[in-house]
Image (cartoon, rainbow, N blue to C red; front, side, top):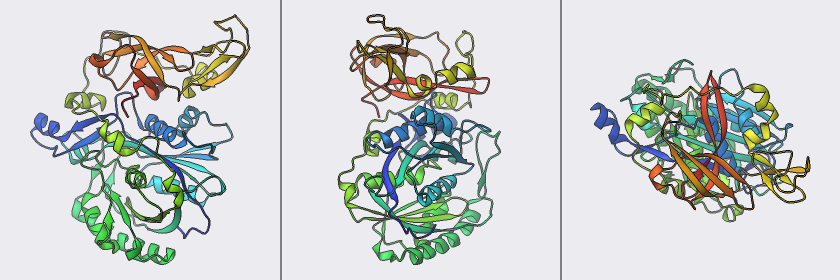
Length: 475
């Protein structure tokens, strides 16, 4: 990564943590080993790397009037192979068809490839990283990793206020065996830690020295260091190897969230930016199949910027504990007896294409004459009977109120019971959908809800994405 010769940097960012947490002690209680102290974040049964990426992007773009020229999706755990996962993100954000969407995947380092491309581009670019991390039951990966997504809108001052300018950076690459996973495996294999430490630390020194020289930054001028990587032992020694052991090291969040892999450096960076003041120089050191070092400096615009849902708010709103058997079920490690109902059918490609704006972006229709909102979109108005006098109306960001609900304990679900709600949207429009991230015993009429992009189910290898409601009090 070369020293930034332009004014590019971060225009906006958004981090998404799933609602659920698993107490690591629950692993020890169930297996007699593994686990540890603290919690890890857990994607719900209806979430995956794509759905979490959508939520991070929504948080990033909610208060921005910038339309990205490209969307890059980085993940080591993509829901699809041989199909572009970023297209679903593109569709859920209701972006114009001219906007490019592409995957950059395979390993946690893929996020750095996406960021390099975005920072070298001339147009605004949306970069999103998301992982659903897992490990063999009782393993260190199971307890110490976590699930999350983070997005950045990268651009220049011509596109909008830059809140953190890119100063530049450097990389060091070597081929060595640290961790690996075959496409059909459910978890990664890891080589002995002392070897990884031996391989990584010289690369940290090389990349850091090159970055300081290239960007003409003195180590004493670094205010905060974001330091992460899935090799814990090497990460612990990286600050000394980089020559910044005296600088403030940002909290790595592993005690409460776990190491989220591909998005984790961005997750820590988001927590730093949430509380940063102008002229803060941030050094990011990411260990993943090599080492990438980069520098950002916050601008005066950071004082006017407010993250739509800061990480601190999401951490405070998390629920705990999640039953360990439920966690294993959601991860596909425990095959439990499903309700005795027909298996779900996969969505067909032609109707999904025809209803793309409704299915993915949750765009309804509004009668121009009466103002009646229809969900799903209709040709004939329920108020006055006007035909084909409709205009599209985006509803994904509109909050609603529960007017009635039912708890269905027989419907097919990976995590029964299903909570079905009828909701009235602010400004008009009524819809029946599922409620997620909620305790059935706590649901009541009058609850306020917001929409969230989820996976209804998977059949024949096809993920059926659509929208559900969630309580607005939950992050």
